[in-house]
Length: 226
Length: 226
Image (cartoon, rainbow over all chains, first blue to last red; front, side):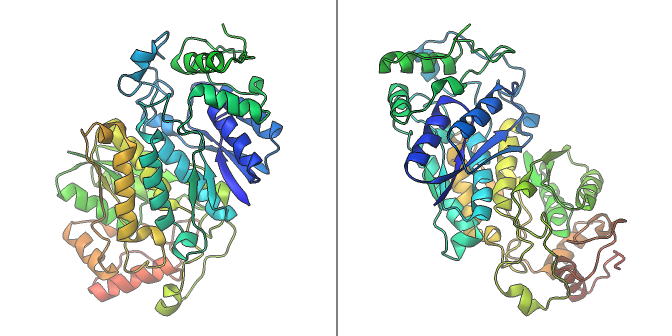
């Protein structure tokens, strides 16, 4: 069975892909080049896709950065050294407008062409509770819409399922799952603000959550931080 | 009030934009360059946007054509001279996978940045009954999902509405509405298979429906067909 797996090259989406593969799916990895300020993430995605022997890896360009409004695509500073309490307050400036909706829509388009019923997305509602499009009720609403949107769905030939195996896991549990699945964590890249060589800053929300996750799981993060 | 209006440059989306403007919205026209085989459509969109004095017109590139599966982006022949009965049978090969889902997602992203609550889409369920993502129940499912996807929606600050003023109109009624709104039909381009100069073929489904619409409305189509 074919599955389209959204793959950013970060920890979560890489563990999600490894999980889909372990479930026996033939995986079609989809990375979106949405005008990120750095290309490091896409290079990580290509490494992970290769290491996990996907059937195919595609990078689709979409100019989401042109709309502005996020520290990840715009010239807003990435916040550093925030406490878990600060991270939990409201929606972070690193939020990209309608990102998961755009990503899932593109995954749906490819799934329809591939005649794949299954789409995997490594979202997580626990450590990123500030992102509206990471919540289970959002995912369910997308799945419902997706089954009304496609030729195969309407003809009753394909029931689209959006799989989010990490949605209720803590970062420590995601690290443990990745380890059980044999994922090489060195291939992944989680930092919102890496230097030119790809070395993670260690201080943005994403780095802090990753480091905390490894620490709580009792694992050594193989990445070298600044 | 700001509205994002999806604009292909065809008859329907141009009438829809003219309608949104007449409703008093400040219109942000969004055209998607999704790997169409011809650029004529985008040129028509730019002409229409200018003629209707939009606040802004953006063309966002997304490589939907890379997925294949449609006569509009792939090397499948566009069907010609089909009868209304033939057009009504099943979903046409000109269907682009998940197209309206991708388009509406991008409109949602821009709407969120602009803090616009209103999105206009010129879909039509009557003459294109074969497209699953042109039906009212699909639009409602998208709107429901959209209100769970965004920061402003979750915070209760912005209730996203997807407007589809043409959804229950016949092509003749759309022509009449466009005429009432003062739309210059010469600016629009509906053909799936125009020649290099932009001249419409007159025989694809889209040309046939347009010509029939003008004829039934008792209007002269100002376009010169091959």
